[in-house]
Amino acid sequence: MAIAGILFGMIAGFITASIGLLAFDLSFWICLALYSLVGAFSTLAITTIAYFLRSSTAAWLKAGNQETAVG
Image (cartoon, rainbow, N blue to C red; front, side, top):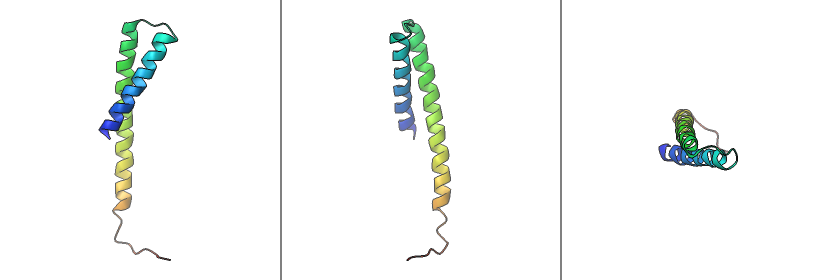
């Protein structure tokens, strides 16, 4: 989960900083700050979403004591 969050955060930060530098002609330092802020926010958001998705799926998989219909 954490590795996926870090990778997607790096990609999101890089894309945002590139757009800011090339399309909006922002200064290098502002783009560096954008890279850090967007990358950190994306990493935290993706890791949090993955954690909650995994915890809800694990609860669903633990219900193994019930009989199932096989057809």
